[in-house]
Length: 316
Image (cartoon, helix red, strand yellow):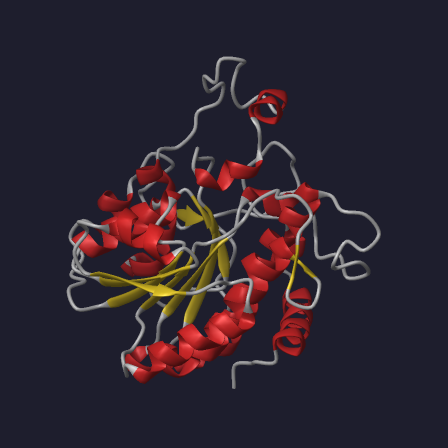
């Protein structure tokens, strides 16, 4: 059954780094796919895994930029992928499947946050389409190589931003008015629900899934926010100095690396993590944890059916 949504006492915490959670693990010869693995905490995830002996495939929309970012890191290859374009997702998956390699870790780290209203594909709202549907299609198309080799771990990088919105079943695409933060929240809730249902479907084949909040980190994910908005939100002062305690990229990458590799999570799955532990369920606006609607199994199945219909792919 799905793992209970309660802390397990991992011994790690908010200040743990990706290198620390990997210490002592034998990962040489394993293969990871890390979307967004050339920027922010994705880049740190790539670096930490590669230095631990994992071969890392970095799908990237900006291929040349990605190659420059990972230059000098061993065991890394860059391939073209635009998560907002389902034809691009299919092309990447077909090329990877043709190599005959198995996937041990699939970390869905790429994403966009609080962007101006943007439409992709057949008019889909871009944050939901990119952060959720693109990764849904990627997992479904790579499924043959996720189940071989003993089964992979699939890690969906969500956010505490999931608390901003449940799935808007009656206005998924914000046709009645766009709010960039609600759109981000819906996409991040979708990331969690995806992990819940993927774990249910995949665990008998050895595939386990997790979602997580990496913490607050100053990375290029904030590209759509100007200084004035960050000042208004109380993140920085007028001179750009931080007013809250942000994680470093090394700390921000730790939970997703831990989710992908930790023996402490063997035989577990379908839960939301934060600070390198399983999170508690909460309705408190000021407390860490996960909202109950984001881990609801009925909503997870409903979202799965919707996503399969929209993308035209499914997990057998």
